[in-house]
Length: 73
Image 1 (tube, helix red, strand yellow):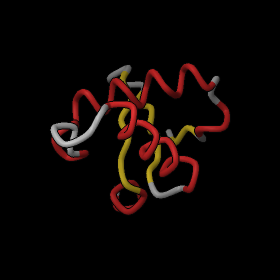
Image 2 (cartoon, helix red, strand yellow; image 1 turned 90 degrees about the vertical axis):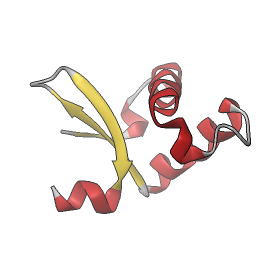
Image 3 (tube, one colour; image 1 turned 45 degrees about the vertical axis):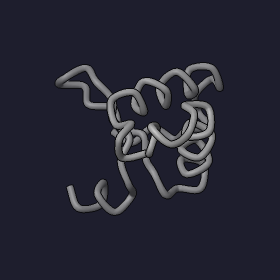
């Protein structure tokens, strides 16, 4: 299920983005920049619809993915 980022409390969204970045950090070049910078970019991409936040009830987990990858599922 796709979760619109504007329906989440800002601190919850921040925690989810940070958790996701810690798992996917290599793809977001965390070696070359701070977590805060990457989180700001990812959050903006979520708000612009370039990334989507997805909740999977079966696995009780979330993921963030590109809108193109989400549409292919």
